[in-house]
Image (cartoon, rainbow, N blue to C red; front, top):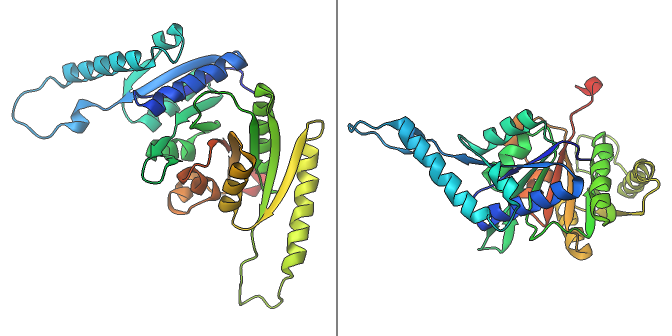
Length: 293
């Protein structure tokens, strides 16, 4: 599953510290390196116009030093000293920096902390989370865990080419923690299209979809103790309900079917789930097969 490195985007907020703690625990369990990274805003990007001469270079050095000191203090009891000693603080935008470090370290996984929204008492993905998920070529774990102990992993899949990679990641994470694994497939109602000359049988459509799911996923989970569940309704709502009803600690979903530019404009089930994060969520990027482009 994890062979090289985990990159965790951190700050000195409680969520950022928990992200570091979870990433470090996963890295220890998998026996891989953990790199903590933080993006500090460049001075020129935050200062207004002024006639007073300013040494921007010196100001940026001060920004980096202050950020390093604050993070070292905040992370002190959350991770091992050697992880803090390798903390990378650079100037720039968080999503860009994370992609750079992932490429430099050939990382297998990105871990980000979700922010808690007090008005609705929900965990939500912020702009950094969405930007990283939209462009990442490696799985991204959006974590709202207090620790890295996972007891139940729920994978949400369709019957597209993305199912195999999504289920494979779910199996690997379940095996890492010795967790239970369940795979859910949601069959959404057929859209009503007046121009269709022949009305489609909704019940027959449901049965066909359920049979396809069972055929595809049974082969992918052969040899594992995995339960399969089929629900009918809106995908994001049904998945969130299953997370709550089954008390899943980790949700695994695939990100596919649209390029990241398209997803800036058109919502997807994955992004809707990230908006109202029902639990810690692992997003697995699955590129389209060559012959489908």
